[in-house]
Length: 247
Image 1 (cartoon, rainbow, N blue to C red):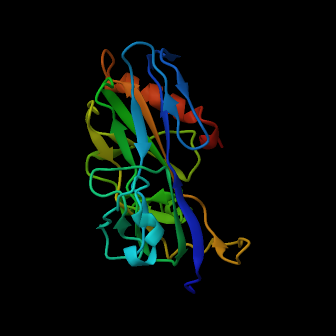
Image 2 (cartoon, helix red, strand yellow):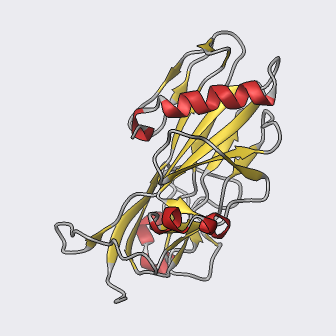
């Protein structure tokens, strides 16, 4: 396959927060186009989903070195690749979208969608959907893997959840434990544009091949007072009722 220059936005990182038992969502949530703020009654969920601001060699992006407050950002190299630089630094996540321009099939880029638990948040069960990406462990279903344009390496603290009624290019992952207040939970740290997918069709205004977005969305369900099974049912129902996930 020819390594054509491509332009893509690797992800609209979105959070949808919910809480409840038996199908009743007791806490309010509001979803914007990109990131949802979570509004709670009393002491409830205060969770966000962000990722690091990614760039190429610092010298090639002088505008990114300004922190906006008169200071200078010190990028951290996370991958030995063009898009391998973290402009937020370790332990910081500030954006909900990164654009990777001119990547080619087989290229790896730094990307670290992270669920951020506020210090005053209730503990929660965390579920995340990944659209248009799969892992090597998902390759047993060859047909499903071939429908995704990206490969990601999910962290060991997450497990794949079986959920019927979702589009074939959407996978659901669950954090294995309980997400605690004040902690952060990163789903993966890199993504690779697959070289074995032929469905790279269509071009943008600059005559570059257009790709599907790699979308990550997070769902939080309060942990206190309910079992993991109940939380899973609540999360799956919420995922299915999210417009972007509907068939």
